[in-house]
Image (cartoon, one colour):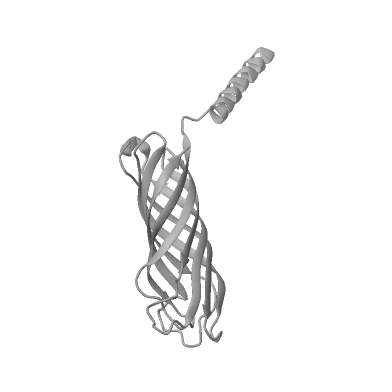
Amino acid sequence: MNEVKSQKSKVKGARALALFAALCFAPSNAQADWLITPFIGTAFGAETTFLVFEQGAGKKLTLGGSVALLSDSFLGLEADVSHTPRFFQGSDPLGLVLSSRVTTISGSLVLAAPLALTQESLRPYVVGGLGLIQARSEDLVSLLPLDKNLLGLNLGVGAIGLLTERTGVRFDVRHFKAVSGEDGPFARPGTSRLSFWRASAGVTLRY
């Protein structure tokens, strides 16, 4: 009798184990898409404590691109690169800054509205991550050269809208801020070592 009960218990245990394994290894219905987005935009609202002859003026042309893996639920990952030439060059007629640029490379987490809610309309998202902010500036007399590699934080919002099965558009606004590096000797209180906003629009290719 005890042997029969023992065999029944083993059978139940095996069934429970098989059910657990089936639940663990069953294929998920969730899907994820690769989204490749070359973009063009502007950098604006810049401020810095670094000593440069010019602080820049107005909006600066920014070029870049991103690659994202975005699920149809709400989670995604993104790698983003952008380049802004003439970042520290303003309207000074003396032209003391010969060349300058700011380049960002970042990895971010994306939280998007689920496709079940947005369907084929605009899909809003929030994005945030860390990466590299590379700042370069060369002046006419080489008194205040700038060559900094900084850890940067970026936070932003945007929306993706698909026009066809494979193509769409993306609108995005982000704030970049350096969270490493030393302030200059004449740093203003409350001013970031380097921070700026970036607004961009691009064509999205879905795979």
